Image: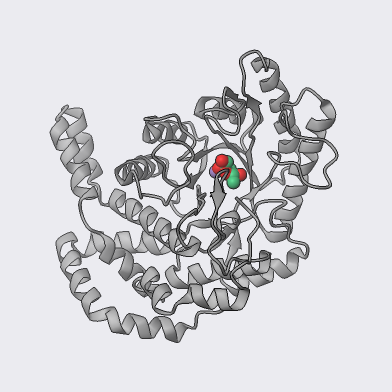
Length: 426
Ligand code: LRH
Ligand code: MN
């Protein structure tokens, strides 16, 4: 259900005067050099949408479908195309196999291209048993004590790479639910060694220009140990695997009160930070809207990213994997994803505003309050008119959620797909 460009232009026209007033006031405050520098960076900055988060999520206690969900990969690509038309900031989709097997790779690639989309990291799945699967992953996949189960998992990951090659993807994310739920259940050293050997076989199957992201997680579905349980373990695997291996930071995969921005700064310094799964959480892996619970933490993470990437002369838009990983139990999945993209780009823009020279001077002279003021002033500067102007210049909607609602796009999706349509995924 395409969104016509005239609908966006019409909407922006109605809201342009108010926008212009707010934007010109802010641009006056920031000065034209800073304004244009940040606008340029914002327009280039694209965030990949997870194919598994376009339907209603649920928990073991229940799932309350919202209607109009995509029923197949083609409709998922159309929904990401709709998000991208609204914000010109969601120009990539990250697929999960086997939830989204692209049976005709070339056709799927062209369909995505027709919406201005490319394929970001592919995701394998050895945390569920598929109907026609021979051996179970109940006791893990790459860590499993049975070599046949490990081989099944390795072969699956290599299949996922092949699907990705046909789509033009350049990376594989491996998240392993492997671990144990009771003391004594697992030999940690042997589980690590078996997992490393499995990842080495997958690494060997990577095309020359591909990357592999090793995603860590503290707990769930195992509740005593996880075999890739934290950044240190992921860093160990990525370092032992080789130059194409990196760590992936899912914001919801840390123990309470972990200092994620410090983890990010060190992984970036060690050239082993591959990318992100953005979301937010108050307790566990809640997969909530990015910036909805801890927006200051999201800003502090981008503050370390801008600092560390500039220190290495990295390209902000293309040198790391920017992806969302969320699940929507009570909100419209598309509105939730639009809000997450907005929050991520706002944190990035605020980090670009930080006066890094003054910050280093304050740090060198241990002027703690001055350092705090520099960060908090940037975080407390309302840069939303800058994000809106970046969208306007990219022919997107001044207010994506506003236009999505004004056009009742969810109702149109329900008319087209029905109330009972269920999307594959979490
Ligand atoms: C695990 C995870 C992983 C995905 C899954 C959908 O919690 O974050 O990235 O494979 O969610
Ligand atoms: Mn994730």
